[in-house]
Image (cartoon, rainbow, N blue to C red; front, side, top):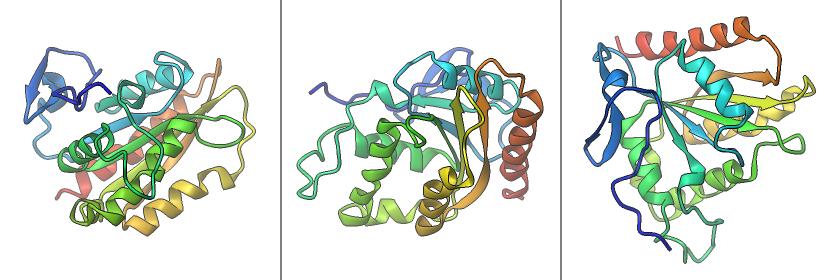
Amino acid sequence: MQKFKQKSLECHTGGKRAIVSGHYKTENSTKNNTDTLKKIVILGSSRKDGNTKQAIDKLNLLSDFDIVDLNEFDINYYDYEHRNKSDDYLDLVRNIIDNYDILIFATPVYWYSMSGIMKVFFDRITDLLDNEKELGRKLRNKNMAVLSSSIGDHLGEKFWLPFIEIAKYLGMNYIGNVHTIVNSDQADDLTEFAKLINERSTTTNR
């Protein structure tokens, strides 16, 4: 297994990268951002530069945030005996929890559900409830939003249910969600979604 080092959060928002507190942060992402909550997109897709990433790039023009690609980390399936505690998951989620207030989960739609790697990420939250309880408690009052992507408008409201219920169980605030369709102009939808996120990032911090 590749050792988890100082790559914890690799940001793709543009600008010169600098290592701050053990994780990558772009200078652009912190400029004039002292009065706002910090935002990060957690990308869970089988393609690094697929349709979901393209949707994220469009959203990033409306709401500046950092991005972490789950494919760049060694994250194993949940294990009842916690034999995978030395993989990248705990270090990654610790950096996310300690450094960000708004978590935007971005996933393609695979067989009417979130991607496999995104599901594994959520399954591993059980580690925080079993062995890292203090870390898990820090999720309370943080904010969650979700962006999905597919080739058509075939999602029902039930798609969002796991995210909504997980946020509720963990004591997080669920901001909202948006579904993006490949080769479709959804500037208005992304603008409204960005507005929800930006309003939360400023008004919650007053």
